[in-house]
Image (cartoon, rainbow, N blue to C red; front, side, top):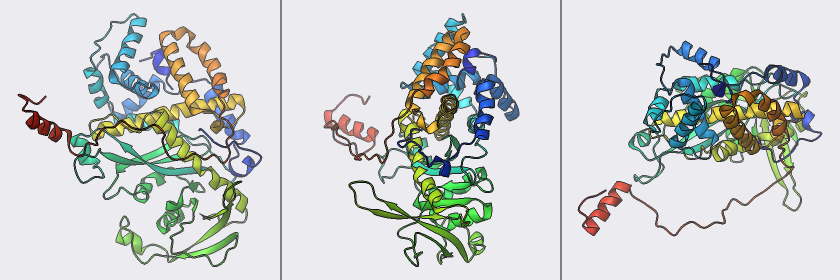
Length: 474
C-alpha cells in the first residue's frame, strides 16, 4: 500500500486585498502558524495511502490484490480530473506506464476493469477524504469564521437511469438530464466544506431546501454569506436556531419595507402568512412571530456608470460590527462565483460523463476532492510567498501540480526535491489586479450550421431508416 506515486497526489480573485483587508478577512499569525506546522514543516502528503486504508477499514471494505485496488483506482480517477483529456483510456495508459517504470507486469489497456473498479469505489471514501482535506480554519474574520454558499447546475449524458433521477427541463425526451448542486466554501482558503446534489426540478430541489443539509458544518458565531435568496425568513429562523449569522442582499421584491432611507438601521421582520412548500406544518407553527435584522446601505458608483444602491441584510446587530465591515464582507461574495468557475471550467465539471446517478455523484465528489487538493497547495504557496491564497492563480497551480505529479510518479527519487521547489513556483503565479472588472455575457464564435435535435436520437435514426429504405439500422 505504500506506493510513492499515490502520496504525491494531493481563487482566482479579480480584486486584490488592500488596506481594508484587516476589516473583513484578517488571516492572523495564529492561523498561518497552524497551517505552516501542518503543511510546511511536516511536509506530509495530503492524500497518503495510510489515510485511504484507515477510511476503508472504518467502512469495512475488503478488496483483493488486483491491479486496480482502491488506491490505484482513486489515483486514476483523480488523474481524469487533473488532465484535459478525461477519458478512461488515457487514465489506464498512465497507470500502465507507471507500472512499467516500476518494472511491474503491464496490464491490459482495456477500460472495462477500470470502469468496474470505479463502480466498486465507495462514495463515502471520497466524501470523507474531501472533507478531511478541507478542514476550515478557526478564524478568518475579526468576528469569526465566514462561509459563502451558492448553487450551480450540472449536465450529464442522456441515459434512462440519469433521466429517472435527474429529469431534464424540457417536456420531450430530447433534453439532457440536469442536476443542481449547493456548495459551502470557506471564504479565507476557498476550500469546499460540504455540498448537496439534487434534481433541477421537483420536491427538495430548491436551494433553501438543500441548505438544511449544509447547516451541520456551521458552528456558533459563524457567518453565512450569500446572495439575495438567503435573506428569506426561513433562513433567518435557521440562523437563529443554530446561532450563526447571515449576511445577504436585501430582496427587492420582498414584502419587508424600510421605514426610511437610513444608511444603517434595524428593522423588525414579521412571520410570513403563507407557509413555504419545503417547510412542514409543525416547524412553521414553531417559527417566531418576528425577527430583528440590520439593514446596511451599499452605494455602488463605478466610474462612468450610473449610481446603484443596494441594501445588505445581516443578523449582526451589535455595534462592534461596523457597517464598513459588513459592506467589505459582502463584496467578497463574488469569490464563490470564481470558485465555481474554477471547478466547472478549469476542472471540467460542467458536463459530466457518468451513465448512472451513482457515478454522477461520485464524479462530482472526485472533482471536489481534486479542487480541495489544489486549494491546499495554494495555501502552502501563500504561506511561502506571504500573500493571501486568493491572490494565486488557480489554473497555473493546476498546471504545475499536473506536471509535478507525472514527473514524481515516474521518478520517485526526485519527488522530495521537486516538492521543496513546488510551493515557490506556485507562489509566483500571481493573478493581476482587476478591480471592478466587467465582461459582456456573450460569445463571438458562431456555432456550426446544424439543425437542433428536438427528438430522441433513436427515434431520429428510425425515421432516417424508413426514409432511405436501409436494410438495417445501425
